[in-house]
Length: 521
Ligand code: FAD
Image (tube, rainbow, N blue to C red; front, side, top):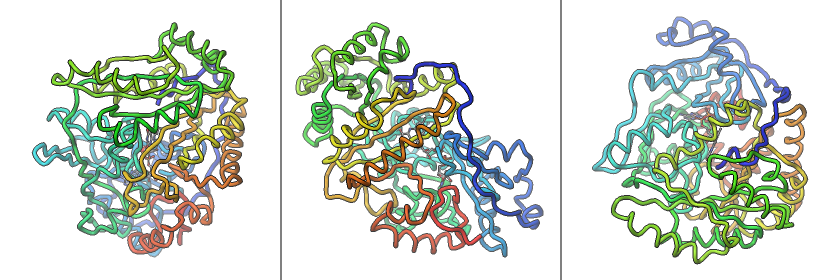
Protein backbone atom coordinates (compact mmCIF):
# COMPACT_ATOMS: atom_id res chain seq x y z
CA UNK A 1 0.00 0.00 0.00
CA UNK A 2 1.08 3.51 -0.49
CA UNK A 3 -1.26 5.34 1.73
CA UNK A 4 0.08 8.75 1.04
CA UNK A 5 -0.26 8.33 -2.68
CA UNK A 6 -2.53 11.03 -3.72
CA UNK A 7 -3.10 12.81 -0.45
CA UNK A 8 -3.16 16.49 -1.13
CA UNK A 9 -2.43 17.81 2.29
CA UNK A 10 -5.33 20.08 2.88
CA UNK A 11 -5.85 21.60 6.24
CA UNK A 12 -8.38 19.56 8.16
CA UNK A 13 -11.71 20.92 9.06
CA UNK A 14 -13.95 18.93 11.44
CA UNK A 15 -14.21 15.58 9.77
CA UNK A 16 -17.72 14.29 10.25
CA UNK A 17 -19.95 12.98 12.94
CA UNK A 18 -19.19 9.82 14.89
CA UNK A 19 -22.25 7.58 15.14
CA UNK A 20 -22.98 6.02 18.55
CA UNK A 21 -23.87 2.32 18.74
CA UNK A 22 -26.58 1.24 21.16
CA UNK A 23 -25.19 0.43 24.59
CA UNK A 24 -25.89 -2.68 26.68
CA UNK A 25 -26.64 -2.93 30.36
CA UNK A 26 -24.71 -2.91 33.61
CA UNK A 27 -22.17 -5.51 34.65
CA UNK A 28 -23.05 -7.97 37.46
CA UNK A 29 -21.57 -6.82 40.76
CA UNK A 30 -19.99 -10.28 41.31
CA UNK A 31 -17.41 -9.41 38.67
CA UNK A 32 -15.89 -6.81 40.93
CA UNK A 33 -15.13 -9.27 43.73
CA UNK A 34 -13.86 -11.95 41.35
CA UNK A 35 -10.17 -12.99 41.29
CA UNK A 36 -9.66 -10.90 38.12
CA UNK A 37 -11.27 -7.79 39.64
CA UNK A 38 -7.92 -6.03 40.08
CA UNK A 39 -7.36 -6.23 36.31
CA UNK A 40 -10.67 -4.60 35.47
CA UNK A 41 -10.87 -0.87 34.97
CA UNK A 42 -14.08 1.10 34.75
CA UNK A 43 -12.66 4.63 34.77
CA UNK A 44 -13.43 6.98 31.91
CA UNK A 45 -9.81 7.02 30.78
CA UNK A 46 -9.79 3.26 30.17
CA UNK A 47 -13.29 2.96 28.69
CA UNK A 48 -12.86 5.96 26.37
CA UNK A 49 -9.74 4.43 24.82
CA UNK A 50 -11.75 1.28 24.03
CA UNK A 51 -14.75 3.18 22.65
CA UNK A 52 -13.67 3.82 19.10
CA UNK A 53 -11.25 2.53 16.49
CA UNK A 54 -9.10 3.49 13.52
CA UNK A 55 -12.23 4.03 11.42
CA UNK A 56 -13.56 6.81 13.69
CA UNK A 57 -17.03 6.27 12.29
CA UNK A 58 -18.81 4.57 15.17
CA UNK A 59 -18.24 4.70 18.89
CA UNK A 60 -19.62 2.86 21.90
CA UNK A 61 -18.28 2.70 25.41
CA UNK A 62 -17.77 -0.58 27.24
CA UNK A 63 -18.66 -0.73 30.92
CA UNK A 64 -15.14 -1.92 31.66
CA UNK A 65 -11.78 -2.93 30.21
CA UNK A 66 -9.92 -6.08 31.26
CA UNK A 67 -6.11 -5.90 31.25
CA UNK A 68 -5.27 -9.60 31.44
CA UNK A 69 -1.88 -10.88 32.60
CA UNK A 70 -2.45 -14.39 31.23
CA UNK A 71 -4.88 -16.22 28.92
CA UNK A 72 -6.40 -17.75 32.06
CA UNK A 73 -7.59 -14.25 33.08
CA UNK A 74 -9.45 -13.96 29.77
CA UNK A 75 -10.93 -17.43 30.32
CA UNK A 76 -12.09 -16.39 33.81
CA UNK A 77 -13.82 -13.29 32.44
CA UNK A 78 -15.59 -15.18 29.67
CA UNK A 79 -16.61 -18.03 31.98
CA UNK A 80 -18.04 -15.50 34.38
CA UNK A 81 -20.12 -13.84 31.69
CA UNK A 82 -21.20 -17.05 29.92
CA UNK A 83 -22.40 -18.68 33.15
CA UNK A 84 -23.96 -15.54 34.59
CA UNK A 85 -27.73 -14.99 34.78
CA UNK A 86 -27.00 -11.73 33.00
CA UNK A 87 -24.29 -12.47 30.41
CA UNK A 88 -22.50 -9.41 29.05
CA UNK A 89 -20.61 -8.87 25.78
CA UNK A 90 -16.86 -9.45 25.60
CA UNK A 91 -14.65 -8.18 22.78
CA UNK A 92 -10.93 -8.79 22.38
CA UNK A 93 -9.24 -5.65 21.13
CA UNK A 94 -5.87 -5.91 19.44
CA UNK A 95 -4.78 -2.57 18.05
CA UNK A 96 -8.34 -1.41 17.40
CA UNK A 97 -7.39 -0.92 13.76
CA UNK A 98 -10.80 -1.99 12.52
CA UNK A 99 -12.85 0.62 10.72
CA UNK A 100 -16.43 0.01 11.85
CA UNK A 101 -16.52 -0.76 15.54
CA UNK A 102 -15.66 -4.46 15.23
CA UNK A 103 -13.55 -4.45 18.41
CA UNK A 104 -16.10 -2.59 20.56
CA UNK A 105 -18.25 -4.08 23.32
CA UNK A 106 -21.13 -1.67 24.00
CA UNK A 107 -22.12 -2.07 27.62
CA UNK A 108 -19.77 -5.02 28.14
CA UNK A 109 -16.06 -5.66 28.65
CA UNK A 110 -13.29 -5.00 26.15
CA UNK A 111 -10.26 -7.22 26.64
CA UNK A 112 -7.16 -5.14 26.04
CA UNK A 113 -5.15 -7.92 24.39
CA UNK A 114 -1.96 -5.85 24.35
CA UNK A 115 -1.81 -6.12 28.17
CA UNK A 116 -0.94 -9.83 27.77
CA UNK A 117 2.43 -9.05 26.28
CA UNK A 118 3.40 -6.32 28.72
CA UNK A 119 6.46 -7.16 30.74
CA UNK A 120 7.50 -10.18 28.71
CA UNK A 121 7.64 -11.05 25.03
CA UNK A 122 5.30 -13.90 24.27
CA UNK A 123 7.09 -14.92 21.07
CA UNK A 124 8.99 -18.23 20.92
CA UNK A 125 10.82 -19.29 17.79
CA UNK A 126 11.39 -23.00 17.11
CA UNK A 127 13.98 -22.60 14.39
CA UNK A 128 14.53 -26.30 13.76
CA UNK A 129 10.83 -27.01 13.39
CA UNK A 130 10.28 -23.90 11.25
CA UNK A 131 7.62 -22.11 13.26
CA UNK A 132 7.03 -19.32 15.75
CA UNK A 133 4.56 -19.36 18.62
CA UNK A 134 3.26 -15.81 18.94
CA UNK A 135 0.75 -14.43 21.44
CA UNK A 136 -2.49 -13.26 19.81
CA UNK A 137 -1.73 -9.79 21.16
CA UNK A 138 1.68 -9.52 19.46
CA UNK A 139 2.29 -7.03 16.68
CA UNK A 140 3.51 -8.49 13.40
CA UNK A 141 6.50 -6.13 13.46
CA UNK A 142 7.61 -7.73 16.74
CA UNK A 143 7.08 -11.23 15.31
CA UNK A 144 9.28 -10.19 12.39
CA UNK A 145 12.06 -8.87 14.64
CA UNK A 146 12.02 -11.96 16.84
CA UNK A 147 12.10 -14.43 13.95
CA UNK A 148 14.84 -12.51 12.13
CA UNK A 149 17.11 -13.17 15.11
CA UNK A 150 17.06 -16.76 13.83
CA UNK A 151 17.37 -15.84 10.16
CA UNK A 152 13.71 -16.79 9.64
CA UNK A 153 10.45 -14.96 8.93
CA UNK A 154 6.75 -15.67 8.30
CA UNK A 155 5.85 -15.94 4.61
CA UNK A 156 2.62 -13.96 4.35
CA UNK A 157 2.23 -10.35 5.43
CA UNK A 158 -0.23 -7.51 5.60
CA UNK A 159 0.97 -4.20 4.17
CA UNK A 160 1.06 -2.65 7.63
CA UNK A 161 2.77 -4.43 10.52
CA UNK A 162 1.38 -2.55 13.56
CA UNK A 163 -1.59 -4.93 13.65
CA UNK A 164 -1.95 -7.85 16.07
CA UNK A 165 -1.63 -11.51 15.19
CA UNK A 166 -5.12 -12.22 16.59
CA UNK A 167 -6.66 -9.24 14.79
CA UNK A 168 -5.43 -10.15 11.30
CA UNK A 169 -6.04 -13.90 11.76
CA UNK A 170 -9.64 -13.08 12.69
CA UNK A 171 -9.99 -11.59 9.19
CA UNK A 172 -7.50 -13.32 6.84
CA UNK A 173 -4.39 -11.13 6.60
CA UNK A 174 -3.87 -10.35 2.93
CA UNK A 175 -0.99 -8.78 1.05
CA UNK A 176 1.32 -9.14 -1.91
CA UNK A 177 2.66 -12.55 -0.86
CA UNK A 178 -0.83 -14.14 -0.74
CA UNK A 179 -0.75 -15.17 -4.40
CA UNK A 180 2.00 -17.64 -3.53
CA UNK A 181 1.53 -18.46 0.15
CA UNK A 182 -2.15 -17.69 0.67
CA UNK A 183 -3.39 -15.25 3.32
CA UNK A 184 -1.88 -15.30 6.81
CA UNK A 185 -4.62 -17.69 7.98
CA UNK A 186 -3.32 -20.29 5.51
CA UNK A 187 0.07 -20.23 7.24
CA UNK A 188 -1.09 -21.13 10.76
CA UNK A 189 -0.33 -24.58 12.16
CA UNK A 190 -1.94 -24.42 15.59
CA UNK A 191 -3.90 -22.07 17.83
CA UNK A 192 -4.70 -21.64 21.51
CA UNK A 193 -8.22 -20.30 21.82
CA UNK A 194 -10.32 -19.24 24.79
CA UNK A 195 -13.80 -20.14 23.55
CA UNK A 196 -17.01 -18.25 24.22
CA UNK A 197 -17.67 -20.61 27.12
CA UNK A 198 -14.32 -19.78 28.71
CA UNK A 199 -12.62 -23.05 27.85
CA UNK A 200 -8.92 -22.99 26.84
CA UNK A 201 -8.50 -25.19 23.77
CA UNK A 202 -5.45 -26.00 21.63
CA UNK A 203 -6.57 -26.68 18.08
CA UNK A 204 -5.09 -27.46 14.69
CA UNK A 205 -6.01 -29.18 11.40
CA UNK A 206 -5.90 -32.48 13.29
CA UNK A 207 -7.08 -31.56 16.80
CA UNK A 208 -10.41 -29.78 17.47
CA UNK A 209 -10.27 -28.89 13.80
CA UNK A 210 -13.79 -27.42 13.73
CA UNK A 211 -12.67 -24.70 16.16
CA UNK A 212 -9.39 -24.17 14.27
CA UNK A 213 -11.16 -23.58 10.96
CA UNK A 214 -13.93 -21.53 12.60
CA UNK A 215 -11.56 -19.11 14.29
CA UNK A 216 -9.40 -18.41 11.21
CA UNK A 217 -11.22 -15.56 9.54
CA UNK A 218 -13.79 -15.97 12.32
CA UNK A 219 -14.22 -12.27 13.12
CA UNK A 220 -13.76 -12.96 16.83
CA UNK A 221 -17.07 -14.88 16.99
CA UNK A 222 -15.93 -18.18 18.47
CA UNK A 223 -13.29 -17.19 20.99
CA UNK A 224 -10.06 -15.35 21.64
CA UNK A 225 -6.82 -16.39 19.94
CA UNK A 226 -4.17 -16.31 22.64
CA UNK A 227 -1.39 -18.07 20.69
CA UNK A 228 -0.78 -18.83 17.03
CA UNK A 229 1.85 -21.18 15.64
CA UNK A 230 2.96 -19.63 12.38
CA UNK A 231 5.07 -21.26 9.66
CA UNK A 232 8.46 -19.69 8.90
CA UNK A 233 10.86 -19.67 5.97
CA UNK A 234 14.49 -18.55 5.66
CA UNK A 235 14.39 -14.75 5.64
CA UNK A 236 15.85 -12.89 2.69
CA UNK A 237 18.13 -9.93 3.41
CA UNK A 238 17.06 -7.37 0.86
CA UNK A 239 14.39 -6.53 -1.71
CA UNK A 240 14.39 -4.96 -5.14
CA UNK A 241 11.18 -2.96 -4.90
CA UNK A 242 9.64 -1.80 -8.17
CA UNK A 243 6.64 0.11 -9.43
CA UNK A 244 5.58 -0.13 -13.06
CA UNK A 245 3.10 2.33 -14.58
CA UNK A 246 0.26 1.46 -16.98
CA UNK A 247 -2.43 3.48 -18.70
CA UNK A 248 -4.58 0.54 -19.83
CA UNK A 249 -6.37 -1.58 -17.24
CA UNK A 250 -6.46 -4.67 -19.45
CA UNK A 251 -2.70 -4.61 -19.95
CA UNK A 252 -2.20 -3.92 -16.22
CA UNK A 253 -4.35 -6.84 -15.04
CA UNK A 254 -2.94 -9.09 -17.75
CA UNK A 255 0.57 -8.47 -16.42
CA UNK A 256 -0.53 -8.91 -12.80
CA UNK A 257 -2.11 -12.25 -13.63
CA UNK A 258 0.99 -13.33 -15.50
CA UNK A 259 3.08 -12.50 -12.44
CA UNK A 260 0.92 -14.56 -10.08
CA UNK A 261 0.55 -17.50 -12.45
CA UNK A 262 2.33 -20.65 -11.38
CA UNK A 263 4.92 -20.52 -14.13
CA UNK A 264 5.93 -16.89 -13.57
CA UNK A 265 5.55 -17.09 -9.82
CA UNK A 266 8.32 -19.65 -9.39
CA UNK A 267 10.92 -17.56 -11.14
CA UNK A 268 9.52 -14.09 -10.65
CA UNK A 269 8.49 -11.63 -7.99
CA UNK A 270 7.97 -12.59 -4.33
CA UNK A 271 5.38 -9.88 -3.79
CA UNK A 272 2.80 -8.51 -6.25
CA UNK A 273 0.23 -5.80 -5.56
CA UNK A 274 -1.16 -2.86 -7.53
CA UNK A 275 -2.63 0.58 -7.19
CA UNK A 276 -4.99 2.79 -9.16
CA UNK A 277 -4.67 6.54 -9.35
CA UNK A 278 -7.64 8.45 -10.58
CA UNK A 279 -7.68 11.55 -12.77
CA UNK A 280 -5.84 14.56 -11.39
CA UNK A 281 -4.57 13.18 -8.11
CA UNK A 282 -0.97 13.04 -9.23
CA UNK A 283 -1.14 16.56 -10.54
CA UNK A 284 -2.83 17.98 -7.44
CA UNK A 285 -1.14 15.70 -4.90
CA UNK A 286 2.11 15.99 -2.92
CA UNK A 287 5.29 16.99 -4.71
CA UNK A 288 7.07 13.81 -3.65
CA UNK A 289 6.36 10.67 -1.62
CA UNK A 290 8.59 8.22 0.26
CA UNK A 291 8.78 6.19 -2.96
CA UNK A 292 8.56 8.73 -5.78
CA UNK A 293 10.90 11.72 -6.14
CA UNK A 294 9.61 15.09 -7.34
CA UNK A 295 10.99 14.32 -10.82
CA UNK A 296 9.14 10.95 -10.87
CA UNK A 297 5.90 12.65 -9.88
CA UNK A 298 6.29 15.18 -12.70
CA UNK A 299 6.82 12.45 -15.27
CA UNK A 300 3.83 10.49 -13.92
CA UNK A 301 1.65 13.61 -13.98
CA UNK A 302 2.59 13.99 -17.65
CA UNK A 303 1.55 10.40 -18.24
CA UNK A 304 -1.81 11.03 -16.55
CA UNK A 305 -2.43 14.05 -18.79
CA UNK A 306 -1.54 12.08 -21.91
CA UNK A 307 -3.39 8.89 -20.97
CA UNK A 308 -6.89 10.26 -21.43
CA UNK A 309 -8.29 7.18 -19.69
CA UNK A 310 -9.00 8.92 -16.40
CA UNK A 311 -6.73 6.59 -14.45
CA UNK A 312 -3.24 5.21 -14.32
CA UNK A 313 -2.25 1.95 -12.70
CA UNK A 314 0.88 0.74 -10.94
CA UNK A 315 2.07 -2.76 -10.36
CA UNK A 316 4.02 -2.78 -7.11
CA UNK A 317 6.30 -5.78 -6.86
CA UNK A 318 9.35 -6.98 -4.97
CA UNK A 319 12.05 -9.53 -5.58
CA UNK A 320 13.84 -10.74 -2.48
CA UNK A 321 17.52 -11.66 -2.39
CA UNK A 322 20.41 -12.37 -0.05
CA UNK A 323 24.20 -12.68 -0.27
CA UNK A 324 23.98 -15.88 -2.28
CA UNK A 325 21.60 -14.44 -4.88
CA UNK A 326 22.80 -10.80 -4.93
CA UNK A 327 24.88 -11.26 -8.05
CA UNK A 328 21.97 -12.65 -10.08
CA UNK A 329 19.08 -10.48 -8.89
CA UNK A 330 19.48 -7.80 -11.58
CA UNK A 331 19.50 -10.39 -14.32
CA UNK A 332 16.46 -12.10 -12.84
CA UNK A 333 14.63 -8.78 -12.55
CA UNK A 334 15.44 -7.87 -16.16
CA UNK A 335 14.16 -11.25 -17.33
CA UNK A 336 10.82 -10.72 -15.61
CA UNK A 337 10.46 -7.10 -16.73
CA UNK A 338 11.05 -8.15 -20.33
CA UNK A 339 7.85 -10.20 -20.25
CA UNK A 340 5.74 -7.23 -19.10
CA UNK A 341 4.01 -4.46 -21.05
CA UNK A 342 4.17 -1.41 -18.76
CA UNK A 343 4.50 2.03 -20.35
CA UNK A 344 8.06 2.12 -21.73
CA UNK A 345 10.43 3.95 -19.43
CA UNK A 346 7.98 3.96 -16.52
CA UNK A 347 9.73 1.55 -14.22
CA UNK A 348 10.81 2.84 -10.82
CA UNK A 349 13.17 0.78 -8.68
CA UNK A 350 14.42 0.96 -5.11
CA UNK A 351 16.78 -1.30 -3.25
CA UNK A 352 15.97 -1.71 0.44
CA UNK A 353 16.46 -4.13 3.32
CA UNK A 354 13.82 -6.80 3.80
CA UNK A 355 12.61 -5.07 6.98
CA UNK A 356 12.41 -1.67 5.28
CA UNK A 357 10.33 -3.26 2.57
CA UNK A 358 7.91 -5.09 4.88
CA UNK A 359 7.62 -2.10 7.23
CA UNK A 360 7.18 0.43 4.41
CA UNK A 361 3.76 1.72 5.51
CA UNK A 362 5.32 2.85 8.80
CA UNK A 363 7.13 5.61 6.88
CA UNK A 364 3.87 6.69 5.30
CA UNK A 365 2.14 6.60 8.69
CA UNK A 366 4.76 9.00 10.06
CA UNK A 367 4.25 11.42 7.17
CA UNK A 368 0.47 11.26 7.50
CA UNK A 369 0.67 11.76 11.27
CA UNK A 370 2.96 14.75 10.83
CA UNK A 371 0.37 16.50 8.65
CA UNK A 372 -2.60 15.42 10.76
CA UNK A 373 -4.26 13.02 8.30
CA UNK A 374 -3.80 9.73 10.21
CA UNK A 375 -6.30 10.18 13.05
CA UNK A 376 -9.25 11.02 10.78
CA UNK A 377 -12.33 8.97 9.83
CA UNK A 378 -11.64 6.08 7.45
CA UNK A 379 -14.77 4.87 5.66
CA UNK A 380 -12.85 2.07 3.97
CA UNK A 381 -14.41 -0.49 1.66
CA UNK A 382 -12.58 -3.69 0.71
CA UNK A 383 -13.94 -6.08 -1.88
CA UNK A 384 -12.96 -9.39 -3.44
CA UNK A 385 -14.00 -9.31 -7.11
CA UNK A 386 -14.07 -12.38 -9.38
CA UNK A 387 -11.42 -12.14 -12.07
CA UNK A 388 -13.94 -12.17 -14.94
CA UNK A 389 -15.63 -9.01 -13.60
CA UNK A 390 -12.63 -6.81 -12.81
CA UNK A 391 -12.63 -4.84 -16.06
CA UNK A 392 -16.36 -4.12 -15.70
CA UNK A 393 -15.72 -3.05 -12.11
CA UNK A 394 -12.95 -0.73 -13.28
CA UNK A 395 -15.27 0.90 -15.84
CA UNK A 396 -18.35 1.12 -13.65
CA UNK A 397 -16.76 1.95 -10.31
CA UNK A 398 -13.26 3.34 -10.65
CA UNK A 399 -13.86 5.36 -13.80
CA UNK A 400 -17.61 5.68 -13.20
CA UNK A 401 -18.80 6.17 -9.62
CA UNK A 402 -15.42 7.33 -8.29
CA UNK A 403 -14.13 8.85 -11.50
CA UNK A 404 -15.07 12.42 -10.76
CA UNK A 405 -13.63 12.51 -7.26
CA UNK A 406 -10.23 13.43 -6.00
CA UNK A 407 -10.02 11.54 -2.75
CA UNK A 408 -7.36 11.57 -0.09
CA UNK A 409 -6.22 7.99 0.27
CA UNK A 410 -5.34 5.10 -1.92
CA UNK A 411 -7.00 2.48 -4.09
CA UNK A 412 -5.37 -0.95 -4.17
CA UNK A 413 -6.12 -3.59 -6.79
CA UNK A 414 -4.32 -6.91 -7.01
CA UNK A 415 -5.08 -10.53 -7.83
CA UNK A 416 -4.77 -13.64 -5.68
CA UNK A 417 -4.99 -17.36 -6.46
CA UNK A 418 -8.16 -18.95 -5.09
CA UNK A 419 -6.48 -22.32 -4.52
CA UNK A 420 -4.28 -20.77 -1.80
CA UNK A 421 -7.36 -20.24 0.38
CA UNK A 422 -8.76 -23.07 2.50
CA UNK A 423 -12.53 -23.03 2.15
CA UNK A 424 -12.97 -24.83 5.47
CA UNK A 425 -12.01 -21.60 7.21
CA UNK A 426 -14.62 -18.95 8.04
CA UNK A 427 -13.02 -16.36 5.73
CA UNK A 428 -14.94 -16.07 2.46
CA UNK A 429 -13.84 -15.55 -1.12
CA UNK A 430 -16.13 -15.03 -4.14
CA UNK A 431 -18.31 -18.11 -4.54
CA UNK A 432 -17.42 -18.78 -8.17
CA UNK A 433 -15.40 -21.45 -9.94
CA UNK A 434 -12.73 -18.93 -10.99
CA UNK A 435 -9.13 -19.58 -10.04
CA UNK A 436 -8.23 -15.90 -9.54
CA UNK A 437 -9.96 -13.04 -7.74
CA UNK A 438 -8.96 -9.45 -7.08
CA UNK A 439 -8.71 -7.54 -3.83
CA UNK A 440 -9.88 -3.98 -4.44
CA UNK A 441 -9.44 -1.68 -1.45
CA UNK A 442 -10.93 1.80 -1.44
CA UNK A 443 -8.82 3.17 1.43
CA UNK A 444 -10.05 6.71 1.58
CA UNK A 445 -9.84 9.24 4.39
CA UNK A 446 -12.38 11.87 5.41
CA UNK A 447 -10.48 15.12 5.88
CA UNK A 448 -13.11 17.80 5.35
CA UNK A 449 -16.64 18.53 6.51
CA UNK A 450 -19.10 16.23 4.75
CA UNK A 451 -16.45 13.77 3.56
CA UNK A 452 -17.69 10.87 5.71
CA UNK A 453 -21.21 11.18 4.33
CA UNK A 454 -19.99 11.61 0.76
CA UNK A 455 -17.60 8.66 0.92
CA UNK A 456 -20.24 6.48 2.59
CA UNK A 457 -22.71 7.38 -0.18
CA UNK A 458 -20.11 6.39 -2.76
CA UNK A 459 -19.44 3.12 -0.95
CA UNK A 460 -23.19 2.38 -1.00
CA UNK A 461 -23.29 3.18 -4.71
CA UNK A 462 -20.37 0.79 -5.31
CA UNK A 463 -22.14 -2.02 -3.45
CA UNK A 464 -25.39 -1.29 -5.28
CA UNK A 465 -23.50 -1.41 -8.60
CA UNK A 466 -22.09 -4.84 -7.72
CA UNK A 467 -25.57 -6.12 -6.82
CA UNK A 468 -27.18 -4.64 -9.93
CA UNK A 469 -24.50 -6.04 -12.22
CA UNK A 470 -24.56 -9.41 -10.41
CA UNK A 471 -20.83 -9.16 -9.68
CA UNK A 472 -20.49 -11.92 -7.13
CA UNK A 473 -18.10 -10.00 -4.94
CA UNK A 474 -17.44 -10.42 -1.23
CA UNK A 475 -16.56 -7.78 1.29
CA UNK A 476 -13.22 -8.22 3.06
CA UNK A 477 -13.19 -6.82 6.64
CA UNK A 478 -16.95 -7.13 6.11
CA UNK A 479 -19.58 -4.88 7.58
CA UNK A 480 -23.34 -5.53 7.58
CA UNK A 481 -26.03 -4.30 9.89
CA UNK A 482 -28.58 -7.06 9.30
CA UNK A 483 -28.51 -10.83 9.71
CA UNK A 484 -29.73 -11.06 6.16
CA UNK A 485 -26.60 -9.24 4.96
CA UNK A 486 -24.42 -11.69 6.87
CA UNK A 487 -26.33 -14.69 5.53
CA UNK A 488 -25.67 -13.49 2.00
CA UNK A 489 -22.05 -12.77 2.86
CA UNK A 490 -21.36 -16.25 4.20
CA UNK A 491 -23.55 -17.91 1.57
CA UNK A 492 -23.24 -21.68 1.75
CA UNK A 493 -21.13 -21.39 4.92
CA UNK A 494 -23.84 -19.69 6.96
CA UNK A 495 -25.53 -22.77 8.46
CA UNK A 496 -22.22 -24.24 9.55
CA UNK A 497 -21.08 -20.94 11.06
CA UNK A 498 -24.35 -20.61 13.00
CA UNK A 499 -23.88 -24.19 14.30
CA UNK A 500 -20.32 -23.47 15.40
CA UNK A 501 -21.45 -20.25 17.05
CA UNK A 502 -24.04 -22.18 19.03
CA UNK A 503 -21.34 -24.68 20.06
CA UNK A 504 -18.51 -22.29 20.98
CA UNK A 505 -20.37 -19.14 22.01
CA UNK A 506 -23.90 -20.24 22.94
CA UNK A 507 -24.64 -17.01 24.82
CA UNK A 508 -23.53 -14.90 21.80
CA UNK A 509 -21.29 -12.75 23.94
CA UNK A 510 -18.19 -12.64 21.73
CA UNK A 511 -17.18 -9.66 19.56
CA UNK A 512 -20.65 -8.05 19.32
CA UNK A 513 -19.22 -5.11 17.35
CA UNK A 514 -19.26 -7.32 14.24
CA UNK A 515 -23.07 -7.35 14.55
CA UNK A 516 -23.43 -10.84 13.07
CA UNK A 517 -25.55 -12.68 15.60
CA UNK A 518 -28.41 -11.19 17.51
CA UNK A 519 -27.33 -11.31 21.09
CA UNK A 520 -29.54 -13.01 23.64
CA UNK A 521 -28.27 -10.37 26.09
P1 FAD B 1 -8.86 -5.16 16.13
O1 FAD B 1 -9.38 -4.05 15.31
O2 FAD B 1 -8.48 -4.85 17.52
O3 FAD B 1 -9.91 -6.36 16.11
C1 FAD B 1 -10.49 -6.81 14.93
C2 FAD B 1 -11.54 -7.89 15.22
O4 FAD B 1 -10.88 -9.07 15.66
C3 FAD B 1 -12.51 -7.51 16.33
O5 FAD B 1 -13.75 -8.13 16.10
C4 FAD B 1 -11.87 -8.11 17.56
O6 FAD B 1 -12.83 -8.37 18.55
C5 FAD B 1 -11.24 -9.37 17.01
N1 FAD B 1 -10.00 -9.75 17.67
C6 FAD B 1 -8.95 -8.96 18.00
N2 FAD B 1 -8.00 -9.70 18.59
C7 FAD B 1 -8.46 -10.98 18.63
C8 FAD B 1 -7.95 -12.21 19.11
N3 FAD B 1 -6.75 -12.29 19.70
N4 FAD B 1 -8.71 -13.31 18.98
C9 FAD B 1 -9.93 -13.29 18.39
N5 FAD B 1 -10.47 -12.14 17.93
C10 FAD B 1 -9.74 -11.02 18.03
N6 FAD B 1 -5.60 -6.09 6.56
C11 FAD B 1 -5.08 -6.96 5.69
O7 FAD B 1 -5.50 -8.10 5.61
N7 FAD B 1 -4.05 -6.56 4.86
C12 FAD B 1 -3.50 -5.33 4.93
O8 FAD B 1 -2.58 -5.02 4.18
C13 FAD B 1 -4.03 -4.41 5.87
N8 FAD B 1 -3.50 -3.18 6.00
C14 FAD B 1 -4.00 -2.33 6.94
C15 FAD B 1 -3.42 -1.08 7.09
C16 FAD B 1 -3.89 -0.19 8.03
C17 FAD B 1 -3.25 1.15 8.18
C18 FAD B 1 -5.00 -0.57 8.85
C19 FAD B 1 -5.56 0.39 9.85
C20 FAD B 1 -5.59 -1.81 8.70
C21 FAD B 1 -5.11 -2.70 7.74
N9 FAD B 1 -5.66 -3.97 7.57
C22 FAD B 1 -5.12 -4.83 6.67
C23 FAD B 1 -6.87 -4.38 8.32
C24 FAD B 1 -6.50 -5.14 9.57
O9 FAD B 1 -5.94 -6.39 9.29
C25 FAD B 1 -7.74 -5.41 10.41
O10 FAD B 1 -8.42 -4.22 10.68
C26 FAD B 1 -7.35 -6.09 11.72
O11 FAD B 1 -8.50 -6.49 12.39
C27 FAD B 1 -6.58 -5.14 12.58
O12 FAD B 1 -5.98 -5.81 13.64
P2 FAD B 1 -6.17 -5.27 15.09
O13 FAD B 1 -5.17 -5.96 15.93
O14 FAD B 1 -6.18 -3.81 15.16
O15 FAD B 1 -7.65 -5.85 15.37
